[in-house]
Image 1 (spheres, rainbow, N blue to C red):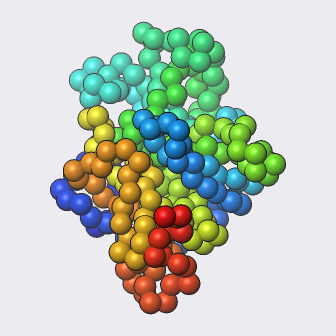
Image 2 (cartoon, rainbow, N blue to C red):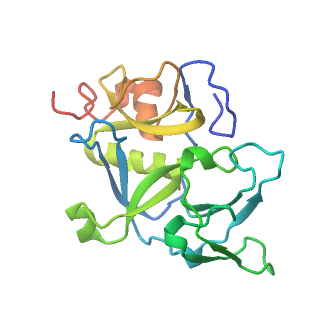
Length: 246
């Protein structure tokens, strides 16, 4: 299957071929918090990066909703930006400017010479909604302080591109032998939802934290994909239990 685009078709359970290569993304380390105590929450990808970009670092694309547009963007303007895999986005409507307590944001425009967008009380939206209109992303927690990463708190709630998420999962696999992938499926009417799943055993059994959807696609990090499907006999990682205690 082709690597992530904005297709809404989920015809079967399948896999996407991983990217040929990853940019660096400035990833230093990563882990998955399975949130064992919170049964209704999705696992969280936590990434230590060289730098967490500030709002002023981003340059935003702007997508304005028209009266006859999809209900998700009718009378709404979307703003989306990406730097080295880190993503920032907002949803703004003049009929509801209560987001972030009514704070005023000044967003740099993607195009040179265009004045910054000044918006009041936007909402942060979510990746699965923005994926209908921009390159696919998924939520992640970012931090650029090693001690904070070790402690496991003071992360920034953020979003990252799918290639960056896969690169982080690849680092986890290479460092720990724990296999994770991204499941892509329809979730409460949103067609491009991504969730981290465990990949366990030599056959690559898929473990969802929550109820397993009837239809989904799997996106594997490159090295895990290689070990499972291309050259399993060459794997240096112990895949009999996916690196998990059983």
